[in-house]
Length: 137
Image (cartoon, rainbow, N blue to C red; front, side, top):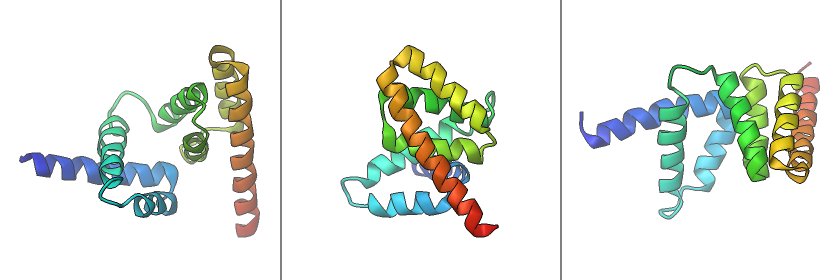
């Protein structure tokens, strides 16, 4: 297999998982918004390495990976990515209680300001999900 073929395999696997977790609409919007010659390599790296290599590994279920991401993104105060991964955690079968407890645990170790911000983000996403659900019901 050539290096180009390996990149293609990882990218395709990563794109599939990324769509499963974050939602195809979000992924396609993100890829389109960051498709310049400058930004495209970062999207390729995230899709190949993060999603194609790490998220496809055996050993952890997607729900566990999602909860780990919530804790890490909370600790780093990365609100935009946290919102994407809160939605992804629910897509991967996490409950509100599991998301809440993950963020509480992270808040104690990462600091209360980071935890408070994470709860604001998670609450916004929960509200969006409830609104989406009520529109389809």
